[in-house]
Image (spheres, rainbow, N blue to C red):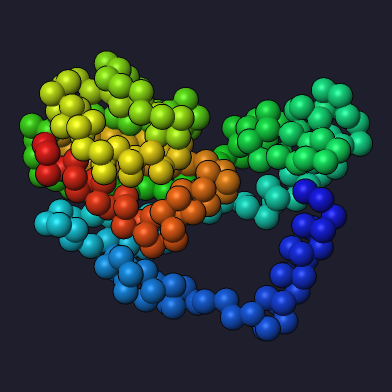
Length: 240
């Protein structure tokens, strides 16, 4: 990260702390989420943080997102980036930092950091389909940090970001591959793991801020992104 970017970040923090920028309260954020996605706060006994949930197209759904130590990772990345630029050579490669270009996020050392302290952003969306005969279907790519312990037969490679579709039922998978809108929507996700089985249809994600913000940008905004996940899971449930 260059000096200008660091300076902008510092000024943003100063503005937030000084009260010049309104930071929405959790209640305001929940209200906006409900208005734009229909998801409402659901609390479970013994669980400290709330889930969000709704009935979507006739299916009960639960949503949970969690951010880890994002600022701690940011500080570590700044330090790695500066060290890479100063030392050069192999250190530039390991930290993704060069004289005029910096891409610390996703660099070899940043991936190692993720393995040690965990991914900064994790997300879980579960849709209860109540269809015990639902065929198994998986979609994930080589970068997905969450993958099945029992890989299914490969059906078709969709693209770099969406990855590959796997299933124990080729006919079931073919119904989705023939749907251009469905495949295009899948292609806008990144490093996720979508799974359908006899219990539920799930969207699981644990990765960097870059991957997360990339998906949001692909869908034209955060709430559009959430609605796209819900639609994707419901489409799979309908076909089961």
